[in-house]
Length: 236
Image (cartoon, helix red, strand yellow):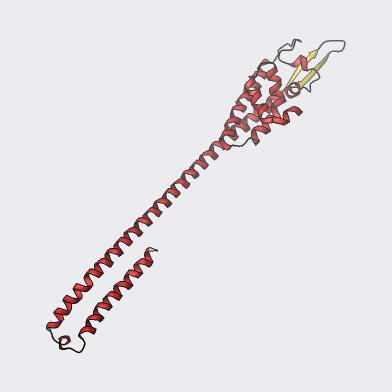
């Protein structure tokens, strides 16, 4: 039973009890001289006090217990709401923290992407001596993707000598790709999503594979990108 309903019942019981006692007294002594005698009022007061006080005390105790129970219940509900609010605030704070961290990682990845693309677009020049002297230009992207007509001449460990073989370009590119893999791992751990890492794996896997072949990139990095590609790797 609800506390408010219980209190109403107690109040009604108190009224009925008081009415019954007074009514019973009047009914018992109606038509007698005692009702109009002054000293009878003292007796009436003693009777009313003796009959009503125990009943009212009991009802008051019951009302007090119900009120205490209701207050405890409301306090418990308040505690639950406070706990829920605190948990919601905690989750909100964690959400904003994750979002801020994710935004920072994405910003760093975008900066790395610009650097990597700039390196891949860089062109190497090679003067070929033969019947007809010519100058060959190939971009790093063409060389590492296997689309270069003079791939052997431009690769880092190629036998054909170059006046200034640009090893530093391959080293720089390898460093950027390794750094990219670290940020992609952190991004996946934070967001529980592999969409962005998979995008970069599809884009840079051929270059990573070629650089690993010439020992510029560690095998663990290659395996990480291969793991992202799964079935797509067989088409690369």
